Image (tube, rainbow, N blue to C red; front, side, top):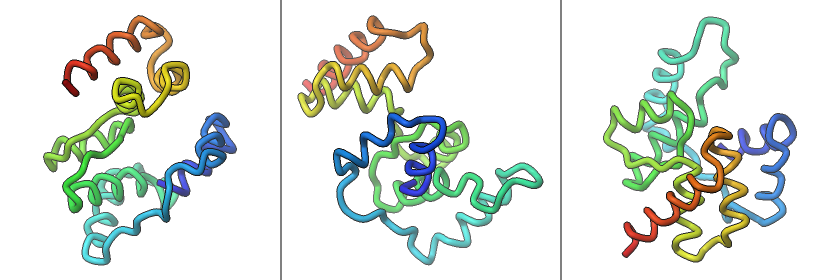
Length: 142
């Protein structure tokens, strides 16, 4: 995913450059363990259209497989990634949900959280949807 974030930051989503400036995520990217590589490649071949570049869907597949191995939550908006998480029983949050939860937990200020939420949701959702998501997250967090 590290490579994909960097690629998207110079293309469709220049706002992602802010993550690099903030030093997030911290640490080095996690590599897919060798015993999951064949599974990842099989999933990539099964879920990529004919003629797709050889790296197509690798980030989503690796994220889902690694989240399953680590028994952690995957942050995933991609349809294939969501499907893999569902099929493998992996807990998943959308980017919008994560932003709302971070605001609810006071790990992110409201303006920054809304900026992320707004990019990650359809335009019709807007501030009212964000405020509702934060309220739900606060209730869930107790």
